[in-house]
Length: 339
Image (cartoon, rainbow, N blue to C red; front, top):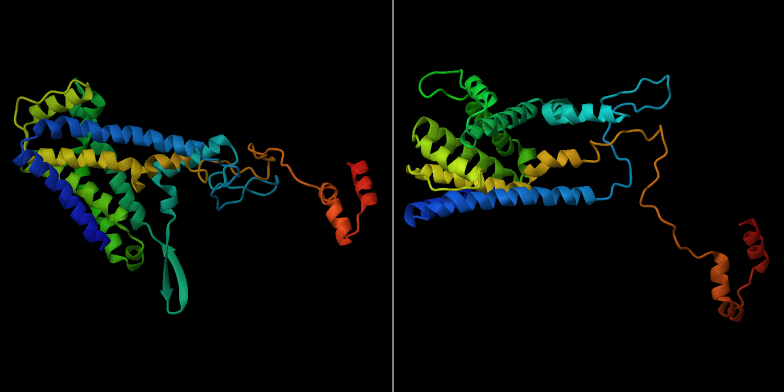
């Protein structure tokens, strides 16, 4: 049901530019206004999420660790698993952000008869790496539409990515790899019964949306070739905040591709995809595990107002005497002297 709902949402998203551009002729709305709206939601939504995370109190040291932390000098500690200094935290974050280290250590659990066994599970890590790295390279490649002249680094990345040439135009390696990675992540949710049980529409929808964006982009490159000069004219105008409708005609497939990209940008800050930024604010990742090295005092601690037994006794003295409850004045005097 969650998959069906996600597919229906994706079909609705595709039909919006089909009707808006193909039937109503609202080309400027879908070429200029909606991309600006989508990326404005992306920009301000991310700022809102980061401010919200930064304002969340973190009164305790709660680093995720599975290694020996720094304690006694004769006990070997794990610098990467349990970092004790800021530089070791940076090192752990580097491996986490660029190599998905925690995902690499992912384990699968299965029953062998009545016995629960654990084994290595690297396919999830491989699928995630293929998707994320390919997505990043594709984003960098697309910068050639937004800048002029095109920097050499972008040209080099474009050349290396398309070295695997079977015909014209050359096939981008990342186009194939991103579909392979996304396809694996989607199939995993459909085939694995445990993962399928835990999957919601919010898990399927972003996968389907990004697959469709990649597929429409590949279709435009290989089969329904658009007017690249018109796309460059539109993209450069949007990037320089001087938008103009291009002189050439943009195909309907391009409008669908652009609308889905704008939808992904608007959806990003309010979805699970925002973990790309959230990992930097995760207290379980960005804290040093130095609980045994130094005393940490909660910075939000404040003097607590409390009532002592003697204060309470003085407040209810008349009631206590009337009820026959003994009054212990001597003990209160001794306590006040000691204080």
